[in-house]
Each structure stands twice: as C-alpha cells, then as structure tokens.
Length: 147
Image 1: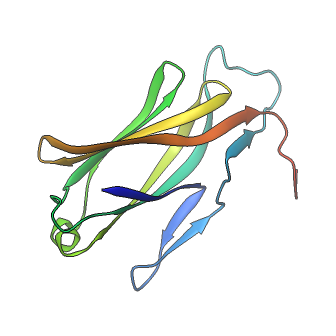
Image 2: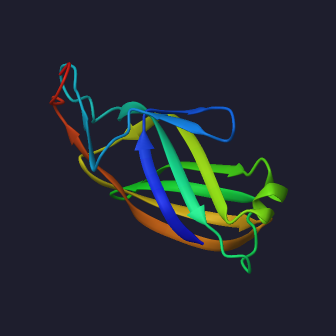
Image 3: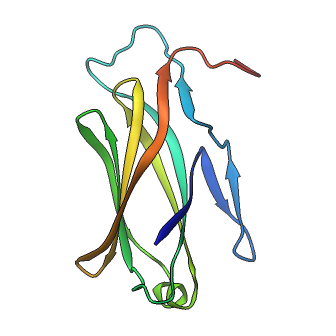
C-alpha cells in the first residue's frame, strides 16, 4: 500500500456520505503551552490528538483487517494503538483505505520529532509496515490568534 495522507489534527468528525471534517489541522510542528514548571520529570504533557491516515491499495494486494499505529519519541514508544477495520469487506472492493484514530491524552515526553510506524495486519500476519515523520514538538507559547 502507498501512503497518501498522514494528517495530525485535534479531532475528526464523521459526516454523511463517507466524508470527514478535520478540526484543528497541524502543520509540521505542535507548540504545547506550559503552566508553571515543566513537570516533565514526573508526568508527560498530554494533548488530545487525532490522526487521519489515507492509503492507496493496489488490486492485487491483500486487504488488511487490522492495524497497529505506534509513535516514537526518542527511546519511548507510546502510545501504541491497535484496532480492526470496521468494514473489511468494503475495503476489499476499494482502492482506498482510511484510518481515523483519536488519542485522548497523547503523551509528550520531550521536544523534538515524533515518528510513527503503521503495521497493517491480516489476522496475525503483518502485511506491511509503513514509517514516517509525523511532527515536531516544542514546549512554550503558541504564536498566532488567541496566543
């Protein structure tokens, strides 16, 4: 499968006719504001995020029925989300596979780049692994409207 989109946003809202509204789409980096001291020694900073992943499938490729999406920050691999496709039989007829993954309280341990790895599975078999650079993280004051 070929990656078409990997979009990071605040929320994904389903609409009628197989459409989605992506709310609060981020660019290349996320600036997370701090209150008081960093507190990073004890607990990570957390933010609700959603990920819209769109893949193109060739007709000869097997159709996945599940996935694991993991995020890497330095040496930490967290969060790691595992799920199943709701309509695997419809996916088999389509050349497009879309994943909408929401993570409440996505943990941020450090500034820097956050990478991702997506395993597409059929039963216990990993059909394909895709990896990429999702976004950068900065702690501090966000610039722009309302900042």
